Length: 630
Image 1 (cartoon, rainbow, N blue to C red):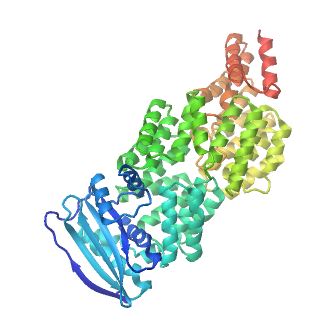
Image 2 (cartoon, rainbow, N blue to C red; image 1 turned 120 degrees about the horizontal axis):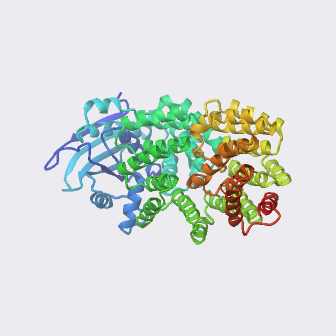
Image 3 (tube, rainbow, N blue to C red; image 1 turned 30 degrees about the vertical axis):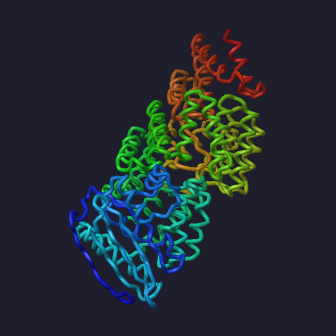
């Protein structure tokens, strides 16, 4: 067990402190590196973090909280965490101790030191020093030192022994791969620059093809960039290598795999077990909130967001998730308060900005929407999302030429960032407007633009739905069949996407009862929001069901379905069907012979589209129908 390691000594002394409690937190300082070898810079701190994060007892102050506190201290975010700066951080975050590390060369050996210092008194709580016979033994030496230190800090021997997977096994035996991974994690979690994190994680897995956590992290950044195919591919690679990881990393990898596969029930079970095993960890709760959002259980999503925020109220991501949960429940004042508090604490992020854009849309604040889009300008992996949001908003109000231009710019921005699937998603979204608005040729052209580009789950759903709207039964059914084969475990595919496509195809055959029956599968999930990707359609099962009732001359039921969309404005947001639902309500009331209600609904639609391009087929039809009611 100790080949290559020479245990030099153990020094433990206590003056006024006696270890830590399960309510305490610690700050990890940067290692002092006097070896002259830059491969240790940042790498040993990352390795020590992996070792300590296995512990359900210890709680490490997150890098996000460190960055926030550094800003309040007037320090640059990239400043080295020297023992002095770390001690200041520790006191400001009301943590219990700072853990300093050092590495030096002594002859042919490397000497590693770990020292825990009380933030309140400055006393040394525990100290450990080990030697490694060679560079390749440094990580193993640190493992030994960290495990001993955990016990001396107050953790029970049983959990130290249970959660003590060596870093070389849990993460990687390659210092160079660990260094690239460390830089990738910092770029992803602290800077939220997902595009820049991709090559760092790619380098990590090229240096160590068995680096499971690097594959899983690469999966996450791809998902954040809307590249769901690449996200799923890397999640699978990590899953195949998961036996080489620690318990906490195994949770991370397995849950990420089920998430990427779309198996929301297995993912939910995994995240719940993770949250129970690590009761101080906020990460699984954030994912649980996202799962409930996809399932349309927004009350439960809010509960999980609130608990994640309680566990770590310094996380910018937790702020963004909480704001988003309030937004989905139409609690707009709460969402704004959370967003403003986050910005006041300098915890801004693209996620927060996306929520602020949707909030501005719901409150008809044109200037605020433009402000969020301006903030995103020039930011790779971010700009395209806000441009696409602007495109959706323009389409919602029937300003189709403007929507097309914003969409073109979003596609170009995604292509500059090498986000091919995301680019296809924007084309699919534009195709859907064109189909809904009656522009068949334009819809076909946009579908054609997705050929040769990666079609993830949501993109393929969008293309199949457009083709179903356009009456191309053979191609739509072929894409639906392929979707079912490619994503056999996917909850949304099975219970939402395929039923919606099949219902529209049945509607095209005038089989109204079949369409309505098919959509019963989607009913429990219809208020859910997709989990990733550039194409994020919502409430289409409701819209198609309403069309089926209308075609079946069950106008009262049709009006009720379209009214659901109007009532769920915070869910449908700036989707085009949010505006079109008013028109469809008017048509339903006109079929009933209720002229007064029909006129009101038509007027609501025409008011929304008062600045619409005049040559849109559905607008021309709506004006003609309204004229007949007068």
